[in-house]
Amino acid sequence: MEKNIGLILISVCILAMTACGKNSSEETSSLTMPDEASQQSLIESFGTVLQNISQLDEASIKSYMEGDDAFSASAASAWDTSGSSLGSFEEIKDGKMEIDDDTYVVTIDAKFENRDANCVFILDKNGTPTSVSIDPVYSMGEKWHRQVKNTRYGYRNRIYHDLSS
Image (cartoon, rainbow, N blue to C red; front, side, top):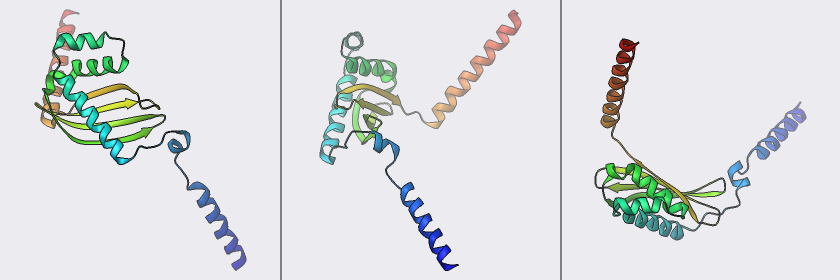
């Protein structure tokens, strides 16, 4: 009896050890995480990108959007979409770098004149920036206000549509 219990425990230990390993993203990714100083330098560099793009006029934004550089076009497009609600860049609140599949992802929580924003920079396996998204952070009150406006607008359109049918 004790021999059977010992064999069962050994089998469970072997199964548990084979289940504990690297996660699938680490196994499939050939990328290595840069050291802390390099990560911080990269975060600060992207903070400078945010500061520079927030100071561009509309003509310059349009020019970058129509340019040949995919990253500049992506940054200009992201700013064109959300820049008016943000205002000028003030500071980096927090930043981190991760590996997702075969890309580096740099996430920056930035403080702007009017509101904060979550900014995500994607770099390819060679460390070349490829795209950026800039997402304003809205307060719960602002989200509710927008939802109420959308609901009222939708209800008004439905009544109009029903009356015109």
